[in-house]
Image (cartoon, rainbow, N blue to C red; front, side):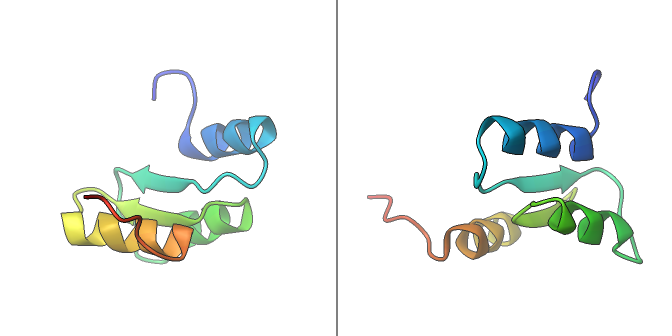
Amino acid sequence: MPRMRGPEALEAILKIKPGQKVVIFSSSSDPQYVFENSARQKGAADCLYKPFELTDLLAAIKRALGSLPNIA
């Protein structure tokens, strides 16, 4: 993001809409999960690292919402 990094964006989103489910996408893999743990502590529902598979995204959405919506 040119103006805001992920953690700052997360804080801004949650300030505008507390309780919003937010999944963070990161372009760099973090083998020690420091970024992921920090994002979750700040309120992210989940964190995915690019590139990710569609199944990973669907699983993150399911974890965030508690279930997948019925998309017919």
